[in-house]
Amino acid sequence: MNIRRSVAALSLCAALGAAAAPAAVADDSPAGRSKGLYGAKDPKFDGVWRQSLALLAQDAVGVTPAKSAIDWLAGQGCADGGFAAYRADTSKACDPKKGEFTDATAAAIQALAAVGGRADTVEKGVGWLKRHQNDDGGWGMNPGGPSDANSTSVAIGAFAATGQDPAKLNSKGGKSPYDALLGLQLGCSANAEERGAFAYTADKGKPVANELATASAALATQGKGFVFETVGKDRGVAPEPLSCAGGKG
Image (tube, rainbow, N blue to C red; front, side):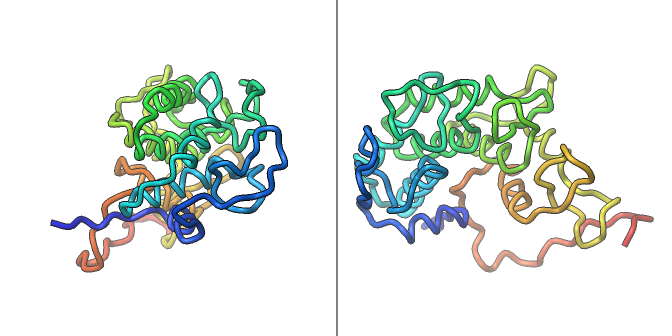
């Protein structure tokens, strides 16, 4: 039976924007950033992220990514297992107190686990995520930052991609990643049309429904990452909105 595999929207965009071989850009750094990197734009803020999505998108449709592309991503890893958004010179050590991100690390783990052959890098990345899990069970974009739905979701996807059950990854406070995510879901106190949606973070003020956070969390709560099996177009009756007896709306 043929199983349709789908990639989250950003992954699909990466696949459409990248050819089977990495695009070359000007070699304007000591490391020579063009060697294996996808895309021609400045990778300062998204090099690891876009590379990860491009590798995942290709793997999802049965295309073997170029070895240079895989080498580039693996080479971006820091000694402690974390990943920065982009390292222009990988010969320079990372600063563990800043510059390493949950999103970049978790995305790289998903990609390298999918293409295979980089078990050591994947294992170190998983260890980095475990060390930086917040007491509420989630992750912030920066280590120690307030948990947010997007970073927590991509971290859940990383653990799922490596065969680990995210529900069993309890923090020192005894909370799982799902505890953090569900704490960001809007309930009966929200307007009827927003019930069930997820907020990006609850750190500042009243939680506000966020589309990207909701899409990310909807996959993560099912233990899925960027790549997942779809149910097809004929999925039957659409689920009913959250109903709250006596609730507002």
